[in-house]
Image 1 (tube, rainbow, N blue to C red):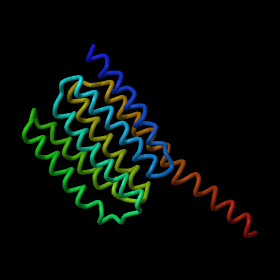
Image 2 (image 1 turned 90 degrees about the horizontal axis):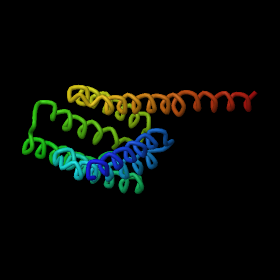
Image 3 (image 1 turned 135 degrees about the horizontal axis):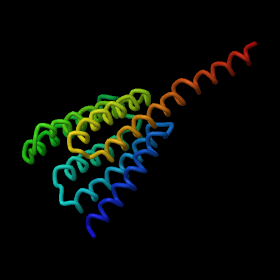
Length: 183
């Protein structure tokens, strides 16, 4: 029964996480990441998997802090202390609960997202999210978690589509519209 609950939580969390990838602004992305992280923590708790539960708990704390800082329009330097804390806690957790060399990917993931999500520019945020999914492909493939690999690939594709729409197509349309008004 706990396994089924875990899978339902992971499925809903993945859906919310994927929804966040298509959000136009950083606030929407962060709100979805907060919700998804909370569901992933619960999912791993029900699986009795402490390291992924702790890592997602650290991500949840970071994402909540970043959502607050973002809502207050704080500069990048305000994100440095939460960034350092999340990476340090992740490194400590991985060191204490080490299961193998692929655990290093969790540290890299937290570092990458801690830095990437601190930027105001959603293009940088999206690029970091794509790279993060890319490194999880390696981790999930090594574990034989092929459904997770498919989710990681889907994450990259949705991020890529959102990047093209928000950072290429819409700006070109706006520029064309602006040029038409000037003429």
